[in-house]
Length: 369
Ligand code: F6R
Image (tube, rainbow, N blue to C red; front, side):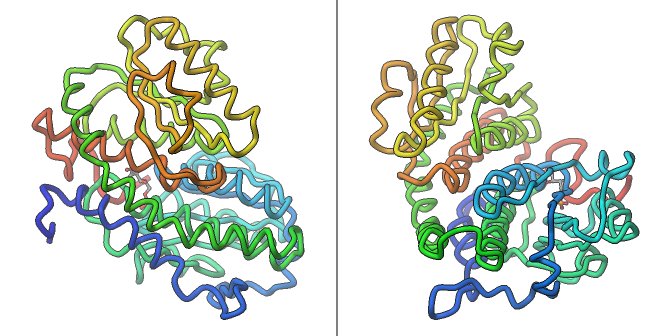
């Protein structure tokens, strides 16, 4: 049931505060430590892990990109993120000290399943992050960390993405706790901030009409670009994917630093460009760099649509449109920053008269190779 929403996608976008909250639920002890009882991989094995490889496809792979920044920061373990179908057909370096994290909403994506088999044959330990109970992937893995997003019906993934990112943060914080790579206070603060995310997502949703109005006004766009740095980069990729999938608009996400290495040649007067801005309260350089990127595309005539934190005034002179999100540390910001992009895609597809839930040529789960 769509519960009064015009599409399942819209309903699922609105389910997101709950998807994040439910994924966090029951995973902390009264003392504030993380408990992941379901992680049936021995602690000694997890302590010895010297490399993590995330394998997944599509949106799930973008959640893995976000995980890389968080896990490397908290745990100091190198993290690679690889599309499952690429991983399978090369000769990856995997051994018993490698933790392969397979992320999937459906748990049935054939390429991801095959990647997991390949990794296990070579002795890697495999942890699955899965949304669908009773699916195949958890049976193929050594352990499973479920996301609790509830059933996702729309082909375009939304709430599963937020839940996957949340589960990845939990995994990162848990490994850091186990391996003692960060002060307990830092981990506790990060966890406390994570607990505040559902309310922040709800706040973004309460302002959805601003995004929808903009999307309707842009229903004739033929190309949209998305730029981000650091964790904003996978958010840019996801924003572009949503628009391709359901609105059939040519859309590209770029790492903002790549602009001058090629993509800036695409910018002509009127080109819409979304820019995902990191928190100005975090690392100054990162924020400044993104602000200069907005300036660069604006100087070439781009129409800049900026996703920026509440109170970030530095973006104002260069933004044609600003979508505000609540203050959030950069590392956790994808959970709030991606929401306006989901709403934008959904509304633009609707304005074009398209079937938001059942885009052409796509299936909810890709069970063939
Ligand atoms: C994007 C989308 C796809 C899936 C991908 C992986 O909106 O739905 O890109 O994310 O096919 O699917 P799962 O997560 O089921 O393995």
